[in-house]
Amino acid sequence: MSITASRFLICTALLATAVLAGCSAGSTTGVLTGIDDACSGPLRPDSAHVWVVRGTTTVAHAQVPNGGTYRFVLAPGRYKVSNVNDLRGTPNALVVAGRTTNVNLPDQCV
Image 1 (tube, rainbow, N blue to C red):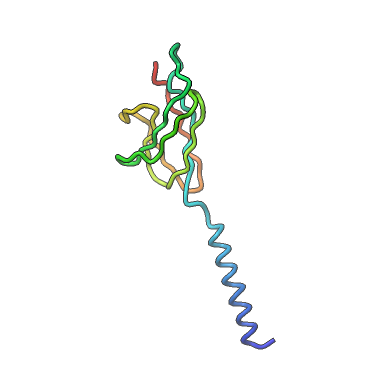
Image 2 (image 1 turned 90 degrees about the horizontal axis):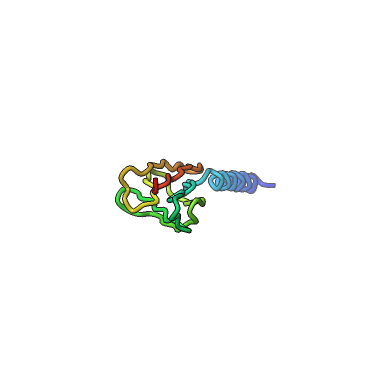
């Protein structure tokens, strides 16, 4: 084998290794999950809404069974998560790439 062919094979192997390492470098999103217990009183609804807000923008919304689990895949950052339309006093969530953040939402009927 010539020196040129050997160099080509070595360069190709190094490039392939770099590409594969980049593919497994990690996730660019995180998961926000938790239990939504919107109301446990006698007028308990069948489902509840969960909103995820970043700044002043709603970035995710889902309707989930009351007392059920919600799950959102989000870009890393700080969010507010709520099961009511009013975000005052709602929990903050820090979403980290490759991690799961758990925020259980409180009973709003108490």
